Image (cartoon, rainbow over all chains, first blue to last red):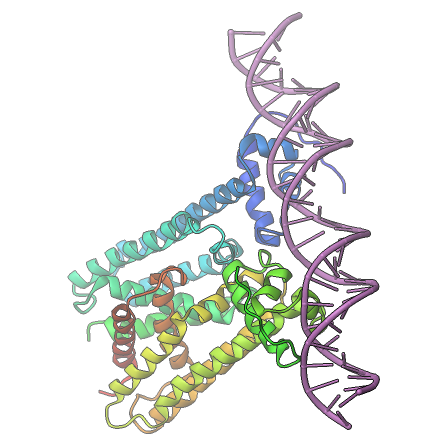
Amino acid sequence: MVEVRVPRGRIDKRQAIVDAAFRVFARQGYEQASVQDIAEEAGVSKQTVYNHFQDKQAVFSAAMAATADAVLADNLAAVERLRDPGPDLRAALNETAFGLLKICCDPRSSALRSLTYAQLTRFPDLLEVVQGRLASGLGPAMADRLARLALAGELRPCDPERAAEQFLALLTAPVETRSRMGTRKLPEDDVKAVAEAAVDTFLRAYGTR
Amino acid sequence: MVEVRVPRGRIDKRQAIVDAAFRVFARQGYEQASVQDIAEEAGVSKQTVYNHFQDKQAVFSAAMAATADAVLADNLAAVERLRDPGPDLRAALNETAFGLLKICCDPRSSALRSLTYAQLTRFPDLLEVVQGRLASGLGPAMADRLARLALAGELRPCDPERAAEQFLALLTAPVETRSRMGTRKLPEDDVKAVAEAAVDTFLRAYGTR
DNA sequence: ACCATACTGGACTCATGAGTCCATGTGGAG
DNA sequence: CTCCACATGGACTCATGAGTCCAGTATGGT
């Protein structure tokens, strides 16, 4: 262990701790990650962690919330692609789908899902923190875009919430299965194939003839 | 705590332990469940647990494997409904879909997913034990049924593996989201609605005109 | 009836990790 | 320059739980 001499100081230790915590939790899981591990990963002493957070659980919550925010932001950015779809709807959907799947396959995103699942029984309020941000953010945003497309006659008239739910289902579930719950990384080509298959089925069901 | 005097004996303690273990793990998670808890739930002494299993991890593996087998069997039974679909294909698909979703919503099934996700990093071979049985069992079985239907002209010609993957995606992902990863139980009507929506979209994409 | 086998419970060791305390160092604001 | 708020690390307490050991007890096959 070669220690890099990092300048002491009261900079953004807190942020460093939050970032490091998520990395450690992602690698080792909640119970296996000791506060000491987190402190070391952050280049900080254990006591400093306790200066910023009440206890281990508070560190965990903060790390999960921050990551959920980041992942949601990425997802929303991908959906924005549909705001101005251009002449080729299929191409726009394909790009959006591929963008969403790349985020979904990212280790950060996988770890977020894993950790949420894992700690549900212990921290029920994790749902508000994580799922509350993701599902309650992404679904409606997608539904908004699809509603506009339907109104513009690009899709057949339909319930946009249901369409959004199914579009996302066609994307995420196959990737989740194929990547073995995020444990093996899918080849880019597979991801593209899933995206195109999803868009194809979606357009058959919701497209205008 | 009123202790029921249970007759001692070398009956199927092992089975009792496996069953009890899954219940305890489902309630408390792997790390939170102590071997003592499991022994008490099984009405057995801690030492007896260690008579039958090498260590806590072995108990866990056995419990997960047994549950995965049971859940897979239920799933396969539901898919069997499609072997003789009868004149009304939509009705047959609806029944199958609803059957699959009821299993999927069952606490046992939810706990199985939760625990698998949670312990992935620690026990990578859990994938072979659990996912290996479920995904590798259900997907192909579904694909078989769909292939027959396509051959009989009930569905348009298509890749049955892809169709099966998407059919299952349309079922499970929405339920997973709506039930908040299995933490709140969905009203029967919601489950039925998801099933019918999935079948509707599936038939629009894969049905014959 | 007998004996091997399995079950019991309770005491034991041992490792681990959360959270606290404190004496000491250090950077930046005034 | 001088505080002061924050950072450090190392030692400490305390609780918990895995896994072992053993002496005593019930069971079922023969």
